[in-house]
Amino acid sequence: MTTETIEAPRSARVSKRSTNFEKWGWLYMRGSGVLLVVLIFAHLFTNLIAGEGGVKAIDFGFVAGKWANPFWKVWDTLLLWLALIHGSNGMRTIVNDYVGNQRLRKIIVLALVISSVVLLVLGTLVVWTFSPCPAGALPSDLPSFCPAQ
Image 1 (spheres, rainbow, N blue to C red):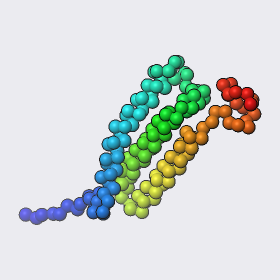
Image 2 (image 1 turned 90 degrees about the vertical axis):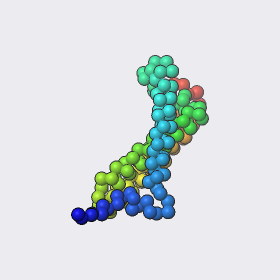
Image 3 (image 1 turned 45 degrees about the horizontal axis):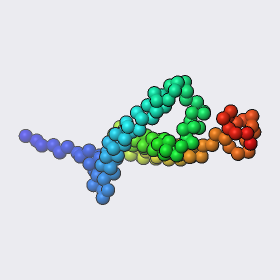
Image 4 (image 1 turned 60 degrees about the vertical axis):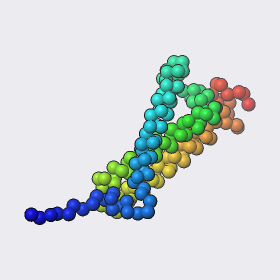
């Protein structure tokens, strides 16, 4: 009778480091997933059901009015950050599972990190610097609800 030793999975070899990044990634996925369900359903409810007109009412003025309230800016920023990091971490997990070449895996994960950071920065800037009535704009370029300047 022969006994064979089965090689430990790649994640087990990586987990010998001082910080178990995979464990924290796994915990983040569970926590953010639960929070995202709440945020997304509340987002859909307030935008589509509680408002008047449903999806037809969502336009530039609707977003401008919503983002005039700091609560909704924080809500949408939290939704953006949680969803993007959750999705990026999921993609990282898939890449780690299915890309065998270590160099290619590092390149793809680096591309994921860079694209995620760029999208987080741009998305956050859009939410927090959005101004429907910018100073110095031509009156013909402004929406109808902006006061005449």
